[in-house]
Length: 337
Ligand SMILES: [Zn+2]
Image (cartoon, rainbow, N blue to C red; front, side):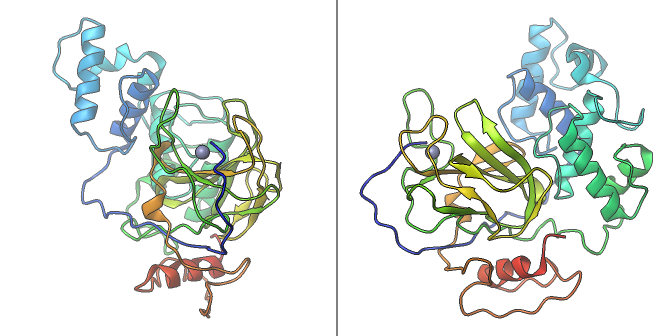
């Protein structure tokens, strides 16, 4: 979130991310545990449902804090020590708006994993979670009521994914949200923290476009420093963040494609001059966007330059081209769902 001066504007648009295919199993209960530990500031890793050393270390810290026997395993006593975040178990009730707890965090993880979740697993069943449940129910062809009971959980847990489900091992690519070179990168030191995104030093009023197919899950002013902020949920737990905007033209719940106009560059929030602060998060943890952005020119509202692709219903993400540019172009043409 800082203005970088002296960089000329080149018309450089792009794409990009290679998601490493995960061979590890993931579990919603592990994700619920990680979400609870994260809320207690004991766990700083991804809420990825994979029980690794960081998760175990966090469980041990919790057990020590509460004087429990220290074994690194989240048994009943440890779950109790998590308070409301440790109960009830997934599937023990029908979750509706206002619910909170272990099962809600597990549900949010399942929604994220399905590719169209609420953007985070915080154990609180709010409007974004309800909207994600509705989308998942619609996609699964089951009763659409926004309430997560056994049928919804079973659909999210899988079995055979619906034909339109994303390929979990496929690449995720992001377009550049604005043209031009980048300024401060991810991890750049700041006075009291490190930079969690990439800055694009572009003029006030530059149109900001969605970096890929997804759903707007936040569109409004943020008092934490982002100013006017838009957050778009993508598949596989990815979100993209667009901060300091002068104005916002998208709304929560809007389905967007790569290239959809979200707002305009500004300097709202904790900013010293017009620029776009852009973040990529996975399960709400900021990651370096740079490896995810390919330097491929794209035209506003169209396919990548020089590319002409046809789109058939249900084709998205199952017709991956060998090169990222073709893939993202196809996804852009084929719509969000
Ligand atoms: Zn920034």
